Length: 198
Image (tube, rainbow, N blue to C red; front, side, top):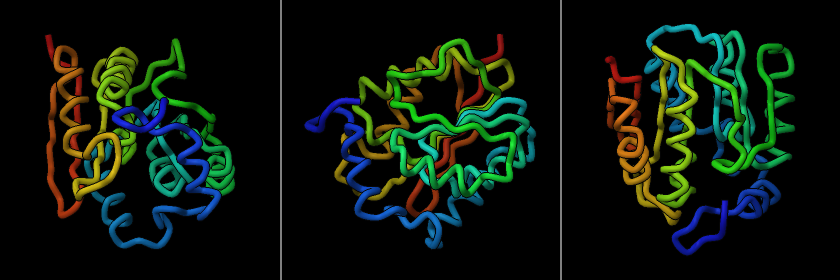
């Protein structure tokens, strides 16, 4: 990721947030976050996943709720302290692996997944980086897999809005993926994408 001014937020931006507050978005105590997690998991329609990938796992609150649906879950974030908290939160879940990774530049090459989850992280990226990330995602999804996008839709001061970020991602993957669920809630949207048939 690169600097602000229409470009992606740099790692230092997130490091400063976590240094000031180890739970900067109140993932552990927010009713909004709890509702969003319930909707997120419901969009997975009770499936079980052999290999899942959560991009932007933060302190692992959603990771812990997602893990029971996965045989193997790779969860990544750019901030070391957030990953340490996530590892501690999921210490009893042996199917979860963590990695400090900067997206889209450090995509796990050669790995494929049947679930790729991007929850409230796309709008921190520039349109160009969203499109680059989308191409990685589409190329790494196995047949029958799911890509789930969750984006905050209220006004934010970030390189993109939640709505624009989702639309850029969907447009960038249109040749390979098709939306099979698009829901709007009070302050967020959920888009489920799956491979085109034929």
